[in-house]
Length: 563
Image (cartoon, rainbow, N blue to C red; front, side, top):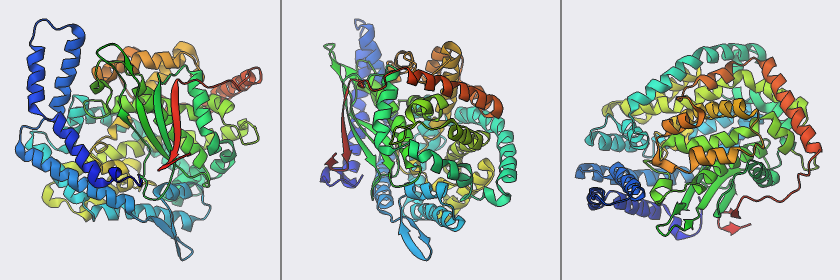
């Protein structure tokens, strides 16, 4: 994060992470928990809490001393690799001169720069990340992780991670993902053919061209209606209209990109929310970050979407009302898709015409015109399957990565595998190279990306449920109470799949997502135009300058500086 306080160093992170895992892996704590559970006079709340203790300790206790040693060694390699990656000088050679840019800056230029040679240089700059990480410890990290997991009886590290977090193994996970992969493959193949025909031929499918031809021109047109300085206000107004409360939480928002800052948005909780034994409420303390560059075209929309996403995480964890902090912490046994469903449901609103009709407002107070909204839908809807395929490419890559024989693992073989998976899953090399995805490096986020896929399935299923029940989502005051009761309050006390079924009335499938991808463009435009017009009419008759009350305290920071 590039903070000056020495307590935020890589060495200190490795130390505190080791101390936390030692605490959670203390076998005497598990034994004592089981002794207390065996008593006959405990009440149901105490029993529920003790069972969560047992489940959590069970995720971290390693009976094998060899596994403990391997985990410690992996943590050290991981810390060194992440530190080196965050210090890496990224950029692109443009017109013979090297221009330093972050990964966010490189991806932004890919979307909007009109010169193909500049876009290609930026894509090549992103590819340097793969070269760098595979030459600076990633190969050794994969080996250590796998050896540790296998010593504990798991198929590999991926199987270990998914079993700990979800309660079912890798093989069960990929049965679910395989149905989505097979169901979306013909849609992807059709979309690539249509894209090539509409955008000027096969060269439009080059990885440095796809995102530009999808978004370049319309991104520039939309940019004035998403000024970054308004994003915090628009998030607050949108969430308040949905009756979302943060229940007294305090939050530090670090929203701007800078050198050596971690290259992905995230949200963490130094203080989880919970109900203390005396019945009093402990509000959450939250830190979250995004990577906005207000000077870059399109960064306002990107920054706002990230803000809505991370604020969704913060709302979720601020509302977990259970009798221990272990129900409201982000690591195993908290389900990955359970954590991501909340944030992805809320950031999806930014793409709705109804939301844009109210909240996409320029600096001089002008609402984004329907013609620009329509152009964005026309340019993106037929190709939204590309995002699905890019999403599932990450778990398919990590699955095959951790299934490789150790003697076959090398910098070159890993890069070859990444290119192979991109081509097989996405139809060609990816605009966001797999080895540039930061989740691969850290223990918490590695073998995690399947969570986004399962969560997106649940997002579409939950949206479909709300639309059938209420007819609308944007500014729907029943959304906050629904999410709070159905998903947030229980924390990790119930399995993700059970929560989705209880909320929507159906078991989780990809049907709603596939149906959204297959929806006729003209039908979608008609629906979105009606929603846009209705919202504009409502805005004309309402005073939208009312105070925002989210029951929270916010500090806006930029690294060490409080803004």
